[in-house]
Image (tube, rainbow, N blue to C red; front, side, top):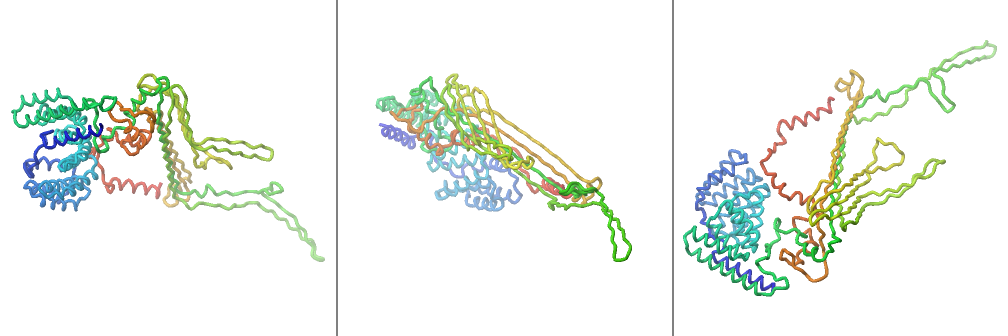
Length: 618
């Protein structure tokens, strides 16, 4: 029966291709009205581009040839401009556009070159929505409706106010067998083109595809009142009746016990492209509502712990006098000897009289001195930590997760002392206790901890030691499914400036290297902990397959849950950061918002030279 549904639905869409359908306009006349659009196109190309005079002259010549429908000549000019600036997105776009019109002029082999030009334009500027729009138009010309829908959707994320873009998105969605998306985009198009001819034609067909026969008839009557009744209106009326007959046949077909009909069905594009895949688990509600005990609801909690530590230190010079010492007097194994010592001696040789001598010795010694010749030194230490534990829990019951290692050791003291037992757990710990308040809100008691080994600090002097870093947070929060909450955060900064030197000598160039020492240290630490609860997802469940509220078989949801890395955007447990970078906030960062200065600029060079000079004289 499901095969019959697909065949019937596909047959209706094939008929739409030969009928008027969604305003399947005749092929564009190549070069028609191009010259009228040249001033606006040139203005758009120049906006945000700092072309050189030579490049701008080539662009003007190419657009002039474009207006005369000499696309080969235009392509030659644009290729010459690309040799001067190959990474310019707009030049790549113009090159692809010339190939595109050349393909429409009869040489279909140029479609591939056009696609490469548009793709390179998008590669060099992800926010170039015009390149995405024309790439979608090229796919429409080739009847690759799924690919066209994907490009139009990407372009709409950057500009949702362009009527032509909205309309072509409707066309691509309709032919991609996704009337639900087409209906949503139509509602946006009607804000800018209320009751326009093409919008009314599209409304008739999209409402018919969704089974809204009364709405389609009302749109047709409005179309007849506003515009002269002609062959188009007659064809529209016939197509509306075709769709009505299709839905009537579906209603009479006993698909399964669910009574599935196209009226309440939800369609999905054939291609699983980014931006159109429904996230796995969104339609698992039917499982949870039917088979999970209300008194024992479950929840999955994603916790993301981000920590960054940066330690920058410099050392300049060496103070020779700080290590120089003189000892007046000395000590040995027999005890301390005085700073002065004397001795008497008497000698007699034969019959000579006695000779007496007295010796006084002063104990003054200079010990050996060792200096480091590394009078300039700069060190940088940076540590980045990302931990993402995930845990499932039942209502009112605590769940605990730990991943790491246990350190068991014993430290032996002196001869008279005993041993000290050491037992440390190093790793990531997560414990949660959920309490369901209603269908959407959950109260969570959360304890998240990360403890890990670190390189021992030279400032803490012990013969045997090990050090750990620890991040620990306990909190009680109320949050809804799918929301991300900043559980805690920390920003810490420490600055040290130490200088040791001989007065006057420490300020003399060159001599200061040997009679002064300057140490600096800048330490920064940032910690961020995020929390996201979500509904549980099943990789596999036995029993009769069910159809969710979305109208799709649950096996599709299970496939997306099992192989979540196949689909985009990823759910939180697969990659929360990927989801954060793909949200609407990321789309608001556009090329041209801030100016990217050249690193060879005078100011930046002076800053680096000034920093280098700081090691020569400080």
